[in-house]
Length: 124
Image 1 (cartoon, rainbow, N blue to C red):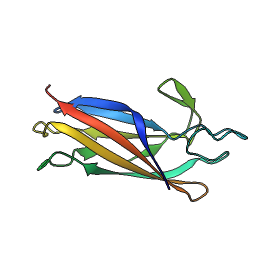
Image 2: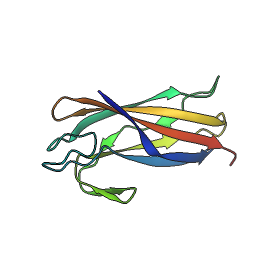
Image 3: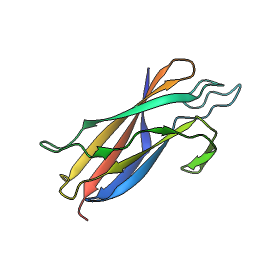
């Protein structure tokens, strides 16, 4: 199982909704520069809020979708099956602080991969 933290940290305010798109890595025959093996893609993915400020409620997490066509993430073009997206929504009274979400993906080769998304909820 591979666990990596996404390079980006999202900053969000209360009552804000934002789609987080996460790149699982290069998937080129002969090169394995990401977490995916050559020829492998993400087949399914789930999300959970694994760390949050004391007493805070979980933000609303939409269902995770695997990209079906090319999409750019941090300037890199991800082919179909190399990235996932999820809508995160903060409540109007969301507790300020850092939230960590764990994405758990299953690949076409039945590998289980994890990525962490860090979100700082601050003053609007």
